[in-house]
Length: 243
Image (cartoon, rainbow, N blue to C red; front, top):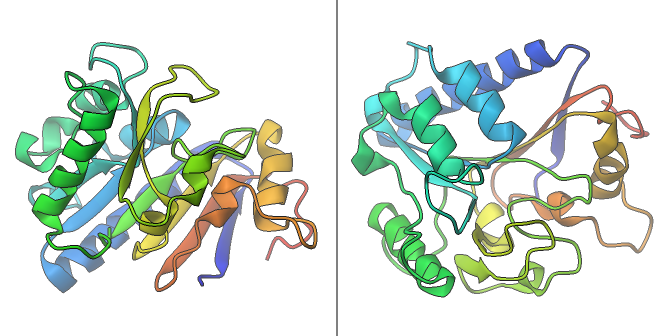
Protein backbone atom coordinates (compact mmCIF):
# COMPACT_ATOMS: atom_id res chain seq x y z
CA UNK A 1 0.00 0.00 0.00
CA UNK A 2 1.41 3.36 -1.09
CA UNK A 3 2.58 5.85 1.50
CA UNK A 4 1.17 9.34 0.78
CA UNK A 5 3.72 11.85 -0.44
CA UNK A 6 2.58 15.31 0.64
CA UNK A 7 3.14 18.47 -1.39
CA UNK A 8 2.00 21.61 0.45
CA UNK A 9 2.04 25.12 -1.01
CA UNK A 10 1.26 28.58 0.32
CA UNK A 11 0.46 29.86 -3.16
CA UNK A 12 -2.34 28.20 -5.16
CA UNK A 13 -0.78 29.34 -8.44
CA UNK A 14 2.40 27.50 -7.44
CA UNK A 15 0.30 24.43 -6.59
CA UNK A 16 -1.25 24.55 -10.06
CA UNK A 17 2.16 24.88 -11.70
CA UNK A 18 3.58 21.96 -9.71
CA UNK A 19 0.55 19.74 -10.38
CA UNK A 20 0.82 20.34 -14.10
CA UNK A 21 4.59 19.79 -14.11
CA UNK A 22 3.89 16.52 -12.29
CA UNK A 23 1.33 15.47 -14.93
CA UNK A 24 3.73 16.27 -17.77
CA UNK A 25 6.50 14.26 -16.08
CA UNK A 26 4.19 11.28 -15.55
CA UNK A 27 3.07 11.50 -19.18
CA UNK A 28 6.65 11.51 -20.44
CA UNK A 29 7.59 8.53 -18.27
CA UNK A 30 4.50 6.55 -19.31
CA UNK A 31 4.95 7.25 -23.02
CA UNK A 32 8.60 6.25 -22.78
CA UNK A 33 7.65 3.03 -20.98
CA UNK A 34 4.61 1.84 -22.94
CA UNK A 35 3.91 4.42 -25.66
CA UNK A 36 0.76 5.98 -24.20
CA UNK A 37 -0.41 7.94 -21.19
CA UNK A 38 -3.81 7.20 -19.66
CA UNK A 39 -5.10 9.82 -17.26
CA UNK A 40 -8.39 9.97 -15.38
CA UNK A 41 -9.76 13.42 -14.64
CA UNK A 42 -12.14 14.49 -11.90
CA UNK A 43 -14.50 17.44 -12.11
CA UNK A 44 -14.84 20.59 -10.05
CA UNK A 45 -11.68 22.37 -8.94
CA UNK A 46 -9.44 19.59 -10.28
CA UNK A 47 -10.73 20.06 -13.83
CA UNK A 48 -10.21 23.81 -13.56
CA UNK A 49 -6.67 23.51 -12.21
CA UNK A 50 -5.63 20.96 -14.83
CA UNK A 51 -7.27 22.58 -17.84
CA UNK A 52 -5.93 26.04 -17.08
CA UNK A 53 -2.44 24.77 -16.34
CA UNK A 54 -2.11 22.35 -19.26
CA UNK A 55 -3.87 24.06 -22.14
CA UNK A 56 -0.75 25.86 -23.40
CA UNK A 57 1.82 23.19 -22.58
CA UNK A 58 3.97 22.17 -25.53
CA UNK A 59 6.11 19.65 -23.62
CA UNK A 60 3.61 16.80 -23.71
CA UNK A 61 2.97 14.46 -26.64
CA UNK A 62 -0.79 14.94 -26.86
CA UNK A 63 -1.05 12.39 -29.68
CA UNK A 64 -0.37 9.63 -27.13
CA UNK A 65 -2.63 10.88 -24.34
CA UNK A 66 -5.86 9.03 -23.48
CA UNK A 67 -8.30 10.97 -21.29
CA UNK A 68 -10.83 9.24 -19.06
CA UNK A 69 -13.06 10.51 -16.27
CA UNK A 70 -12.79 9.22 -12.71
CA UNK A 71 -16.48 9.96 -12.40
CA UNK A 72 -19.05 11.90 -14.37
CA UNK A 73 -22.50 13.28 -13.85
CA UNK A 74 -25.25 11.70 -15.94
CA UNK A 75 -26.14 14.91 -17.77
CA UNK A 76 -25.79 16.27 -21.28
CA UNK A 77 -22.46 17.79 -22.31
CA UNK A 78 -24.11 21.20 -22.50
CA UNK A 79 -24.96 21.10 -18.80
CA UNK A 80 -22.86 23.13 -16.37
CA UNK A 81 -22.57 19.89 -14.36
CA UNK A 82 -20.80 18.00 -17.16
CA UNK A 83 -17.08 17.58 -16.59
CA UNK A 84 -16.62 16.45 -20.18
CA UNK A 85 -18.44 19.53 -21.45
CA UNK A 86 -16.08 21.75 -19.45
CA UNK A 87 -12.93 19.87 -20.44
CA UNK A 88 -14.05 19.77 -24.08
CA UNK A 89 -14.09 23.56 -24.18
CA UNK A 90 -10.97 24.15 -22.11
CA UNK A 91 -8.46 21.42 -22.98
CA UNK A 92 -9.45 18.94 -25.64
CA UNK A 93 -8.26 20.96 -28.62
CA UNK A 94 -5.03 19.00 -28.16
CA UNK A 95 -6.45 15.48 -28.08
CA UNK A 96 -8.03 13.33 -30.78
CA UNK A 97 -11.75 12.71 -30.07
CA UNK A 98 -11.02 8.98 -30.34
CA UNK A 99 -8.70 9.27 -27.32
CA UNK A 100 -11.27 10.99 -25.08
CA UNK A 101 -13.57 8.55 -23.34
CA UNK A 102 -16.76 10.35 -22.36
CA UNK A 103 -19.95 9.01 -20.81
CA UNK A 104 -22.88 8.27 -23.14
CA UNK A 105 -25.56 10.32 -21.40
CA UNK A 106 -28.26 9.16 -23.86
CA UNK A 107 -28.27 5.77 -22.09
CA UNK A 108 -29.73 5.06 -18.68
CA UNK A 109 -27.21 5.58 -15.89
CA UNK A 110 -26.88 1.79 -15.42
CA UNK A 111 -26.32 1.28 -19.15
CA UNK A 112 -23.91 4.23 -19.24
CA UNK A 113 -21.82 2.56 -16.54
CA UNK A 114 -21.65 -0.67 -18.55
CA UNK A 115 -20.82 1.28 -21.68
CA UNK A 116 -18.00 3.07 -19.85
CA UNK A 117 -16.49 -0.24 -18.83
CA UNK A 118 -16.45 -1.21 -22.53
CA UNK A 119 -14.64 2.04 -23.34
CA UNK A 120 -12.04 1.37 -20.67
CA UNK A 121 -11.64 -2.19 -21.98
CA UNK A 122 -10.85 -0.83 -25.44
CA UNK A 123 -7.53 0.34 -23.98
CA UNK A 124 -7.28 -2.24 -21.20
CA UNK A 125 -8.74 -5.50 -22.56
CA UNK A 126 -9.27 -8.61 -20.47
CA UNK A 127 -10.73 -9.19 -17.06
CA UNK A 128 -8.00 -7.66 -14.92
CA UNK A 129 -8.50 -4.28 -13.32
CA UNK A 130 -7.30 -1.46 -15.59
CA UNK A 131 -3.98 0.04 -14.54
CA UNK A 132 -4.29 3.73 -15.31
CA UNK A 133 -1.08 5.70 -15.49
CA UNK A 134 -2.47 8.57 -13.42
CA UNK A 135 -5.78 9.26 -11.69
CA UNK A 136 -6.35 12.87 -10.62
CA UNK A 137 -8.78 12.99 -7.72
CA UNK A 138 -10.47 15.79 -5.90
CA UNK A 139 -12.06 15.73 -2.47
CA UNK A 140 -15.19 17.34 -1.12
CA UNK A 141 -15.48 18.84 2.37
CA UNK A 142 -17.23 15.60 3.40
CA UNK A 143 -14.23 13.56 2.23
CA UNK A 144 -15.84 12.09 -0.87
CA UNK A 145 -13.74 11.41 -3.94
CA UNK A 146 -14.96 10.49 -7.42
CA UNK A 147 -18.66 9.88 -6.67
CA UNK A 148 -17.86 7.70 -3.67
CA UNK A 149 -19.48 9.31 -0.65
CA UNK A 150 -19.08 8.55 3.07
CA UNK A 151 -21.36 5.71 4.12
CA UNK A 152 -22.44 4.93 0.56
CA UNK A 153 -22.61 1.22 -0.39
CA UNK A 154 -20.58 1.98 -3.51
CA UNK A 155 -17.53 2.18 -1.24
CA UNK A 156 -17.86 -1.55 -0.62
CA UNK A 157 -17.76 -2.55 -4.30
CA UNK A 158 -14.90 -4.98 -4.89
CA UNK A 159 -15.63 -6.52 -8.31
CA UNK A 160 -16.87 -3.94 -10.80
CA UNK A 161 -14.73 -1.36 -12.58
CA UNK A 162 -17.47 1.28 -12.91
CA UNK A 163 -20.71 1.56 -10.96
CA UNK A 164 -23.82 3.69 -11.44
CA UNK A 165 -24.90 6.04 -8.66
CA UNK A 166 -28.53 7.17 -8.54
CA UNK A 167 -28.66 8.60 -5.02
CA UNK A 168 -25.72 10.97 -4.79
CA UNK A 169 -26.15 13.26 -1.75
CA UNK A 170 -24.64 16.00 -3.89
CA UNK A 171 -26.70 16.96 -6.96
CA UNK A 172 -27.13 15.84 -9.63
CA UNK A 173 -28.06 12.47 -8.11
CA UNK A 174 -27.19 10.24 -11.09
CA UNK A 175 -23.53 9.59 -11.90
CA UNK A 176 -21.06 6.92 -12.84
CA UNK A 177 -17.82 6.40 -10.95
CA UNK A 178 -14.68 4.32 -10.87
CA UNK A 179 -14.50 2.03 -7.85
CA UNK A 180 -11.97 1.80 -5.02
CA UNK A 181 -10.27 -1.31 -6.50
CA UNK A 182 -9.63 0.61 -9.74
CA UNK A 183 -8.19 3.58 -7.85
CA UNK A 184 -5.90 1.24 -5.99
CA UNK A 185 -4.75 -0.52 -9.17
CA UNK A 186 -3.44 2.71 -10.70
CA UNK A 187 0.24 3.31 -11.30
CA UNK A 188 -0.19 6.69 -9.63
CA UNK A 189 -2.95 8.58 -7.82
CA UNK A 190 -2.79 12.32 -7.12
CA UNK A 191 -5.33 13.93 -4.79
CA UNK A 192 -5.69 17.70 -5.13
CA UNK A 193 -7.28 19.62 -2.27
CA UNK A 194 -7.40 23.33 -1.52
CA UNK A 195 -9.03 25.52 1.09
CA UNK A 196 -9.49 25.48 4.85
CA UNK A 197 -12.97 24.01 4.42
CA UNK A 198 -11.26 20.74 3.46
CA UNK A 199 -8.92 20.62 6.48
CA UNK A 200 -11.05 18.30 8.62
CA UNK A 201 -11.62 15.92 5.73
CA UNK A 202 -7.90 15.89 4.87
CA UNK A 203 -7.14 15.03 8.50
CA UNK A 204 -9.75 12.25 8.61
CA UNK A 205 -8.51 10.87 5.29
CA UNK A 206 -4.79 10.85 6.02
CA UNK A 207 -4.71 10.63 9.82
CA UNK A 208 -7.94 8.96 10.95
CA UNK A 209 -8.44 8.23 14.63
CA UNK A 210 -7.36 4.79 15.81
CA UNK A 211 -9.84 2.14 14.73
CA UNK A 212 -11.74 4.52 12.45
CA UNK A 213 -11.95 3.94 8.69
CA UNK A 214 -10.55 6.85 6.68
CA UNK A 215 -12.93 8.94 4.63
CA UNK A 216 -13.34 7.86 0.97
CA UNK A 217 -10.46 10.03 -0.27
CA UNK A 218 -8.19 8.30 2.23
CA UNK A 219 -9.05 4.89 0.82
CA UNK A 220 -7.27 5.67 -2.43
CA UNK A 221 -4.02 3.83 -1.65
CA UNK A 222 -2.45 2.17 -4.71
CA UNK A 223 -1.24 -1.32 -3.89
CA UNK A 224 1.61 -1.17 -6.41
CA UNK A 225 1.97 2.48 -7.31
CA UNK A 226 2.47 6.00 -5.99
CA UNK A 227 0.17 8.26 -4.01
CA UNK A 228 0.59 12.04 -3.95
CA UNK A 229 -1.47 14.68 -2.16
CA UNK A 230 -1.19 18.25 -3.49
CA UNK A 231 -2.59 20.77 -0.99
CA UNK A 232 -2.47 24.39 -0.01
CA UNK A 233 -1.71 25.34 3.58
CA UNK A 234 -5.38 25.73 4.43
CA UNK A 235 -6.28 22.18 3.43
CA UNK A 236 -3.23 20.77 5.25
CA UNK A 237 -3.62 22.94 8.35
CA UNK A 238 -4.92 20.21 10.71
CA UNK A 239 -2.41 17.51 9.83
CA UNK A 240 0.01 16.50 12.55
CA UNK A 241 2.57 15.15 10.10
CA UNK A 242 3.22 17.39 7.10
CA UNK A 243 6.49 15.81 6.02
